[in-house]
Image 1 (cartoon, helix red, strand yellow):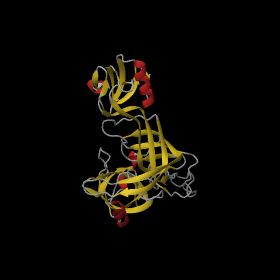
Image 2 (image 1 turned 90 degrees about the horizontal axis):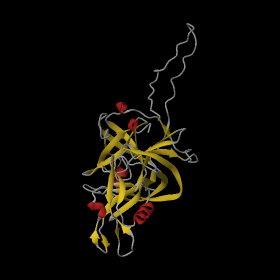
Image 3 (image 1 turned 135 degrees about the vertical axis):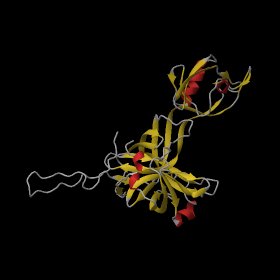
Image 4 (image 1 turned 60 degrees about the vertical axis):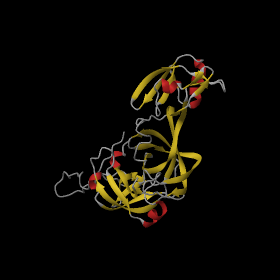
Length: 335
């Protein structure tokens, strides 16, 4: 686990042992980060099967929903059936077929809790398959913005906020692939309705793999063959160096190339426990014209002030899309 170190000029000095001569070595060089702003598509395997809704099963003995009746909830992640790890929709189907309609034990993860739930699958009279009355998914996908890539290691950070909702804050990834994404359209943000970027995954080859997701974003490693030759590098600065006033963000709202847009930092709150360390306001006329301000998909857009990386865009104000929140970069670095 790497920890960000902020070096102050002159903080590390060596004194010559011979009076009157000798050079003083320069301060250690600060870590460098490739500047993000590129939009990426994320395809995440949740290491289980997530319940997204319930549906009654029409069985010969009558309709019912065994999952709901047994106490399962939307957002629950089914991770094992009768002690056998269940990662995909197909594996869950195989487990239900093996049950033969007998009482079966399910291991469910609900947030940070692990629950053992017993229920009996019903045989659907239409197709003869055993079911428990759930609509499910085994992957999460979407688009977001890469914030930085550490020079040398290729370690990246993106999004700046949790991938999933409050019901599944501790999502554990089995496989997570990151693809280049081209933005092909924008739904402008309006008061009371968040806008969004519309992207097309260029999934001929992944550009990175993710291995960690937490409340501050998605993390992993870029492929060694990714071309960073035209990508600028920056140093990072702590929240303590951020000030109210002018700043910029880097975002991609068309195609694959990030652009610089002007913003203003309206508030700095280093101690905010919800990772809302900045309140920002979009002032760039072009960005306001094209998107209305901050839209979904821009999460992770790096925030720079005085040429240094200080944070990332995370949320938009629903009642004012020109304003939003940002997270301090030191909360992302080192993951």
